[in-house]
Amino acid sequence: MFAPLLAIAFVLAPSQDAAPQAAPSPPTSERYEQAMSCAGVMAATSSLHAFTGNAEAQASSDRNGRGFIAAATLFAQPLGLTEAQLSEAFSASTARALGAVTRNTDQAAADAAIDRLNADHDACLRLVQRWMAEANGTS
Image 1: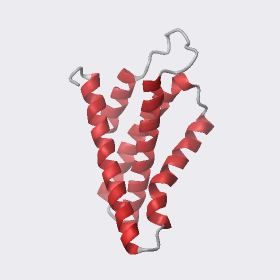
Image 2 (image 1 turned 180 degrees about the horizontal axis):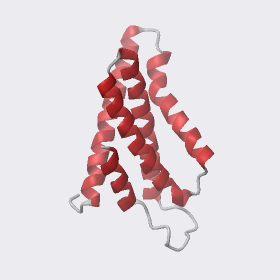
Image 3 (image 1 turned 120 degrees about the vertical axis):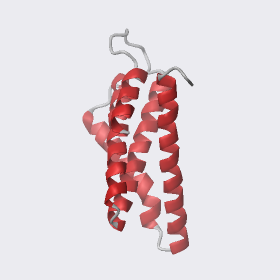
Image 4 (image 1 turned 180 degrees about the vertical axis):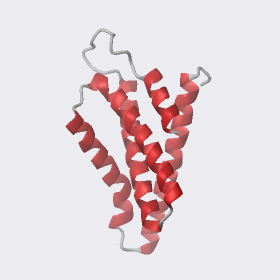
């Protein structure tokens, strides 16, 4: 999934040769936020797979996470974010995604948080499918 996601990001990212704008366009900013959020979801999912010993699922989540990080980085370029800001945003998105699971001492609440994380993971994969359709002109 990493290579297609990176290719999609290149297609959807605004050209760097364009004249500077006073403020970034909402879709670019929205796509950055979506990609960064999904990078955190993939990192959290990877951590859970590592905890349960599911190496294949962990590797898949890691690949997808790298793709979302690459996309977020491209979408962030017009926003002028620094590497430190990107790193901080990734850490925060991962903490948000994993926090609900790790903060719950009640098993039912932790299970519900894992279900939510799985739903977020699936939503991120659907997001990539929408981006692919848009990049291919089939949306």
